[in-house]
Length: 112
Image (cartoon, rainbow, N blue to C red; front, side, top):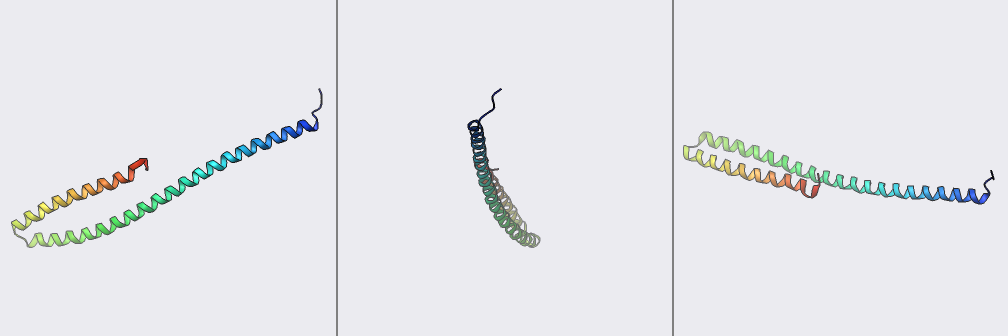
């Protein structure tokens, strides 16, 4: 069996280097895609945190309004109570529509 010469070894090393360079380029592209995905996730988390902070403020305001309505209910006549009850239904409906819109926007474009 003949021994491989220097040219054969040089070609084998160059082939291995080319294969290694191709694999490194592939891994670099995968890393860049992963990094872009992570940046998008962080951006969406920031948006969600801001939405949750706004929701917490709204809940606090709603609690104060609820306490005021409770006081009005205790002091009111039946006519006042009917107006409060109808207003509560309308507010509840508006809240459900707002919640639906918020959830829909989170899942738009296959985001979540």
